[in-house]
Length: 476
Figure 1 (cartoon, helix red, strand yellow):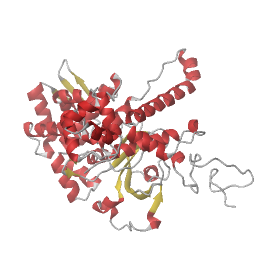
Figure 2 (spheres, helix red, strand yellow; figure 1 turned 180 degrees about the vertical axis):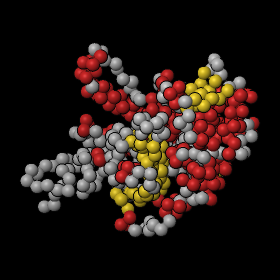
Figure 3 (spheres, rainbow, N blue to C red; figure 1 turned 30 degrees about the horizontal axis):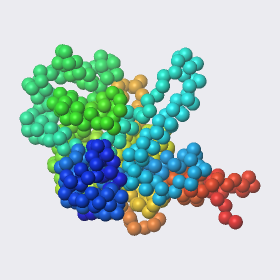
Figure 4 (cartoon, rainbow, N blue to C red; figure 1 turned 120 degrees about the horizontal axis):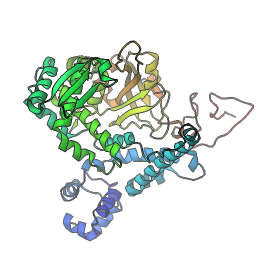
């Protein structure tokens, strides 16, 4: 397949490697003039050239995907939707040209804007901080969680070497019996690493669910963990002990700019390893297809939580053995997004709130129940979403109960592969709920839940007349 939008990325990659056009052309066995045309998107970059590039330069072909362009374009549009740029005539074609033709500059704009927002929020809290502590701690330019989310997205949430490590553990620890996972993982830790496992009272754990003492070689797990969660924490610890080299390679990425981000990445990938141990790739994919992605049934079969099943489904991206390309989000009742990933093309707002019409918010109205939705974005993309609330385990009667909502979704074309679409008329226009990435980027002016005016239209106020929302224009 030929690709005509890779020129800017190829040019940035060449410059990063300090190669001239002539030198790279020689290595690729093409003429410098032809390479120049490719870099300016006037000739296609063929599949054969892409393979040569992957052999010659440290490039992940997936990073050149058009899906990455679309994600960058969506985030840039969100940036330029800020009132800060209200008087500038920045149109979508300008943004697309920047994302595809100048990817490094596009990334720089995103990082600069994120630093600006962080600084602005810090300044807004300065007075309270000074009055309470007498000092002001400056915030980082980017949150570590955002950097790790970006890294997972760039890898399409799939790590082959971690999958291979989980398969090797399954063979070494004889994890074929799903009902004996805990005992066999504990035996493996004792036999191979000299680590003993103890179940401790919640009061002794002092709020921790898992605590490893590397000196005493003791892994303590809280009694409040249920069986599946105990298995997960055991597998996580095995991952930290056995996958150190892989964790180091993945977390040693320029995208992660702080020690905190790299440490958080190690935890995230160790969690990935634990999921791969509890839900082996081929076995889990086969079960997901057979049971038509019944999330609760898969949780019962693999002794895992609803959230763990949803997260594992987003990682099924092995070439030639892919599952449905899902998007997933975890959100709290205040609208804070703590986990997000998209392989479906669904656009998450990065710098502002999400659309209240999205069923992940409606899930809080029916706790513990599955709710489904057919949603359509302003650009016409249509998705099928499944959402449900989940509760974090508490340590007792007086412990607070934390509640989140999880949403798992895919393009509507995949909906019939899921049991949740049974009995639904997916072709009916009445079934479609208009949803936007964020108010500033959504041009649906008749939305009664609009909180901000759209960037595409100026704010007009008529004090004598009220529409369906304050920002909705009135018909003459």
